[in-house]
Image 1 (tube, rainbow, N blue to C red):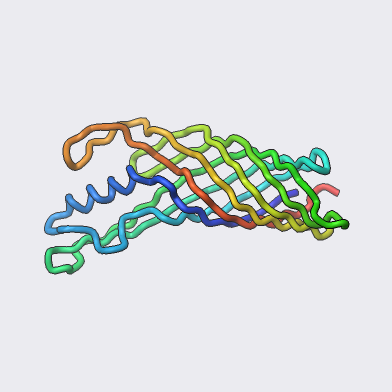
Image 2 (tube, rainbow, N blue to C red; image 1 turned 45 degrees about the horizontal axis):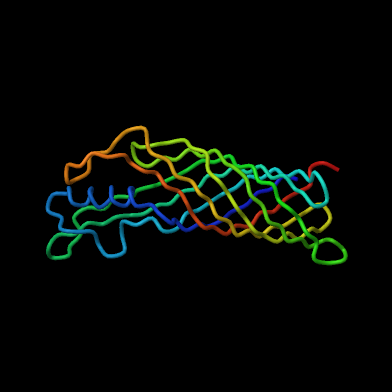
Length: 198
């Protein structure tokens, strides 16, 4: 089955990109701080392409291609609270993930399934001039509704995705250290599959 989906995730630890933004704000001439509510990566958007193969009635292998991105617009203000500068930041990853799902039908017609799955993923992450590629892990729980040649899945998942960028970073205070790209997240998504093999 070929599937197309969309989801939303919540960053659990985007601390280095957020620190980078705070340092940028300190470096803007005439600025004294970031306007309230700016400078944090909270929500990510996750468009998904899925290819599913049912190996057995109880086992479904899923290949996922995902692009996830979190964006934030940052406004820095002067001592009077007036905007001095505004800039947008984007924090993204592209991933190829393979998940083995164990399926269990919950009705007699076997058109509704609950499933639990896990598997590895290869992730490329980028923020500003910093990037990294790493292997991560996904665990997920969901429910699928099958109607003839169409299947709709609702999924709740957890991703562990963390790596150190290739280059070190010099922070505003002069400290030089590794720059950590962390896309660990909780997410919810919906995927519609179409049967392409009779």
